[in-house]
Length: 574
Image (tube, rainbow, N blue to C red; front, side, top):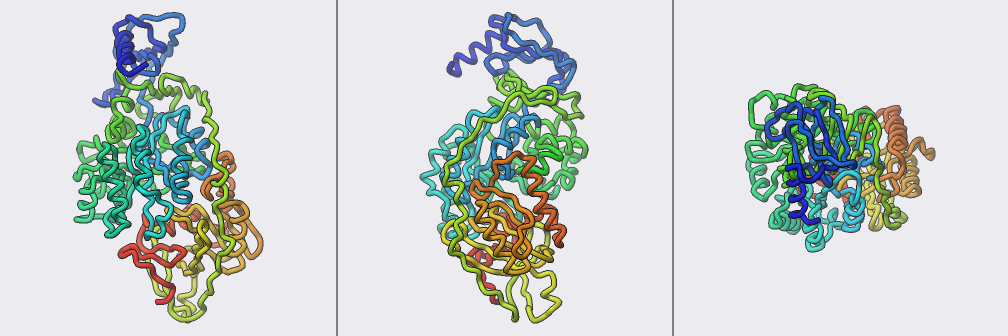
């Protein structure tokens, strides 16, 4: 049925000429346009679309019409996740879908960077195929694959190869482009500026990442067509970006939880129609302990966000930003029948969920399962470190190091190895190219806190580097060899003994095990780190981010340190 015929049928249902497939009665419908909760409403559904929303009436019915009595409960639009990483939860896409369904999220807009950082275009293709024909709806953005230097962008396809993705109706634009990369001079900056222009010319979005940008740099970045950002961490940063016309995404997930810090924005009496609530990704611990976007929404309500505004932030606002409001984001005629039934406006606890008119969750139980996904064999063989070199370790003199000032942010420091006080709390850090030949660089890391053993990960952001942090070469070598043997993931070892591990053989990023198993494996690795001196929350994430240009100020690659201010590759020697 084409769109014209479909809309004609919906119109006939509303007029009482054709019976609906499903009738929801006695509901308190949340109107996303006016923020009203309207009592005594019915919703008539035909072919997965809404034909009528209004006062309870007696519609034309036949013996196939399904009746659902909402019993005075609130009916919301299906939630929309506006920014997440569906393949960064470590347990794979199928497990992600399985655990998202009970949250009431019926539309997900996901980045596609994780596999692509390792295998380029094939990674994007694999994820996009996996998103097809799932019980909830997916849209995606293509990854700009921004690296610390041009060499770290070796897996990035030519922009021409990405054009077919941008023309796909399910592709909504280019995923988060780090502001520093978009403003870079030379070919590295030209590549992402060209990619952004391609998206804008097709009417697609360019998603932003403005962490650390302010003043003229923020405005110059905005001039290049970026329209959203999920990085504001203070109320003033939220306000600055709203004033510039951004769709501001408040992040409440595994990476950061910003709601408490920015909650004052709800008390300023401002127009918040460009405010969106997102997770930016949730790991198994978060999924199984708290939930997904539903947990973020409950926290917003707990902190005093007005219910109507909170629900707009996860429905209509997201839909309007991505140009999807004619299909999703509201309970209104001519939109897809995505519905979530909850007890009351202030109690977000889904009891019934419909996606395109099909019941997918009821009374605490999912009624659908993810479609099985197959992956190319070569994606399970990405830890190629046969010829890596273990660099010599200096024992005296002045050297350059990285110092953690938070669990994610590091700065450049100079260490005098002849000074015993300065050597305290110092760990070795090794970056190895695990895809193209095993180039390596050894540096020093201060502030991680590890007192014994070594930890390594292949889940590093924006890079193909395997990164190991350790106290001694023997433990580090054990970690490297074990990561090679299991195909990637995270490993903690002491001397020659592997203490805990999380195998992630799909591109060295994802496991195929149930989320519950992944949580226990990650708990074991992180528990071992805590027992051996590391105090940071989610310490594997700290190691994962040491090679990304998303976070200031000094990062590491297999070629050396990289100073973000000027993208200079720096040696160990001062």
